[in-house]
Image 1 (cartoon, one colour):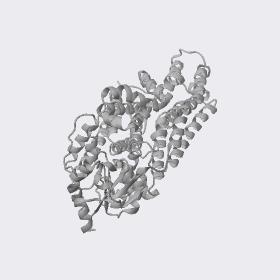
Image 2: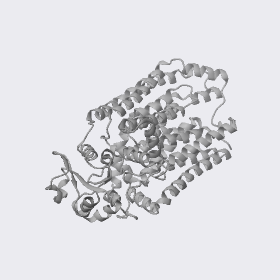
Image 3: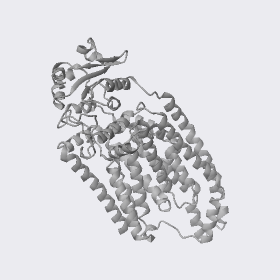
Image 4: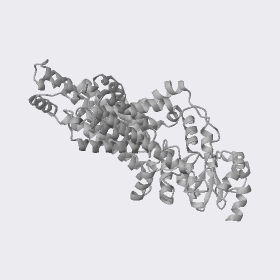
Length: 566
């Protein structure tokens, strides 16, 4: 039996309901102004933090380096495979095969149009998050008022975690936006209501949704775990139309996986095994210390291989601590959205899809990738659409209750006029419009203040990287104890990271030389780590910043190569 998503109302009843909800525009206007203010504040942070020197800035600089290399070497010359280093590419390019390639590709194109820069990068992330908020707002289309939509959008843009990471150059922003778009189009164009729509239009929208899901998987792995949300609707509808749509979206995901496998596997034969090793490490399980096809570029992975977070710490300390970053309304949305599922048939279908898809991604990724969630605090962003849509669903289900009122009118259970019947709901909605911005601001104000006041445009690492850019030739290869991609971005030179001691350098120097026999080689170390390089500590550096660090020409085989080859 097919299930219906809508109830039929007398036209006069609908008119009276709509008139009641539209009676006062001031509360909704306040809510919309709060959403605009949150977007302005996020944009301000993106502009004010004009250097990669903030929490998790190493991820932003990581993608910026890959985008820069695409533009320098050419997208198709690199075979659309991201390279996480600067020129020269060396005999074994530092390819980044752990994640799909779409985000750095699009970022490279964005840099070509608007210019490469930190602020440009940040503003692109803000634009993606505003687009996600607009899609979440749109998922409540058809409601008698705009309060639920406004609450959802404000919860998304006003959460403390959004101000922490919403401006950062993360691939997740693109992946979340595309996943929300795919879920919305799937839910809107399937089900009983959709069957009354024009068939050709519905097919076009489902095609766009499937392409959005393909693109989401081409951006990050997490969208694959939104699949249970699509399956939920197929099981609930039990209709051929929804089943065909589910098949289409499933084929889109499989096509993305096959494309990535072909793209990476054709040039890097150890890709699958290396990716599996990385997944095992990120899940907290054992992994091979030396990955197949090992090069000195892999030393950073070897350093991380033994890091693991116990389940007890992860579940009872880390996750609860980070849940606070969703804000009071976001936490209520997560709980209220779950409580609303009992009346899912009468709630906005696209909002339910977003809630279930986001919740599914978070729960499954938290279980499968414990280490990754622990290391990357910003991964909590994948749960934010659920918190936002859950806030809107909770309002519809427990505060506004327009569907319940409509049912009462149809059944004749309530003889009162629709206007009188919804007066309390209108007052509750008005109260929510004024209280929600206050609750959001009370938590987010301190977050924004701390982010802006703690920011400094430079650091010893950035200063040493900029010195390297000024002093070293274009074909220089730097070895450094720094593991951070921020150093790679600001140095503008090819960098081999995590060379933590002279012993590691001596062990790896033959392999390092093989990367580029005609290149110059240099050591860059800060004051704290130079003690691990005793042969260089007492020698005069090529260049230095007092009390910060210095640059040395390398000795031994690498130094001999420099003397004869350059």
